[in-house]
Each structure stands twice: as C-alpha cells, then as structure tokens.
Length: 124
Image (cartoon, rainbow, N blue to C red; front, side, top):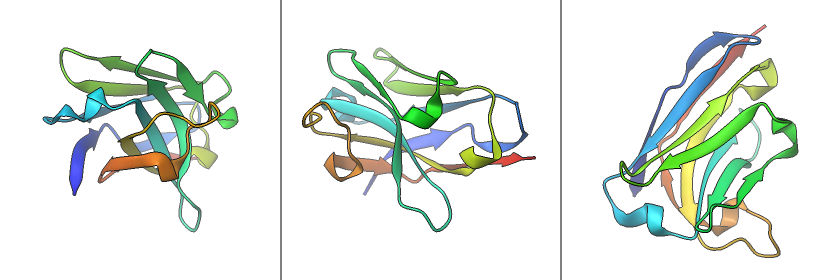
C-alpha cells in the first residue's frame, strides 16, 4: 500500500537541478529511517540518500556532494535537492521508510513503506 506521495520529477538537461518532495499523512516519518531511492530501467532499486531518526545522513557514493536530503517534521515532508544532474541519474525516484540501518548501512530490503515514485529524466 502506498504511504507516500512523491513529486517534483521531470525532464531536465545535464547540469540542471531538481528538488523532489515526499509527503505523507500518516505516522511513517516516525520510523527509524527515511530515504530516497531510485530505480533505473533494467536495474535494481538503490539507495540515493537517507536520514535516520537521530538526523544522521547517508548518501550513495554516486551522489558525490551533488544531492542533499532534508526534512520538515512539522509538515511531514522530506526533500532531496539534486544539483548537477547527469544522464546516469535518470530513474524513478521513490520515498521509503523502514527500520534502523544494520551495521550503519541503509538497504532497500529494510524499507517497509514506499511511495509510487516520481520520474526524473536527464537529457544529454
């Protein structure tokens, strides 16, 4: 069942920026880990960035300082600011929430709740 609503995706050029938004009306932002994940055509879903309940952040290596995850607790909203987008960033981006990272690693399999995703297409 879909718990989150992602928005902000679109078609952009290489080097452009996008800000994705994840909103929910349920209590899912109280879970230990919230994150952004992505899935490109023919590939497995992967972590992009995540936030733990103690505000620790996790970023995939490919982010390389280009993306920043944040949240607004009062508005029950999570964001990811994506700068200097590249064609390799083309994917459906999902909001997920789940349990505490094991061995300090955020994994897709540990997420319990998901949104439907928002498509980001980066043209060269």
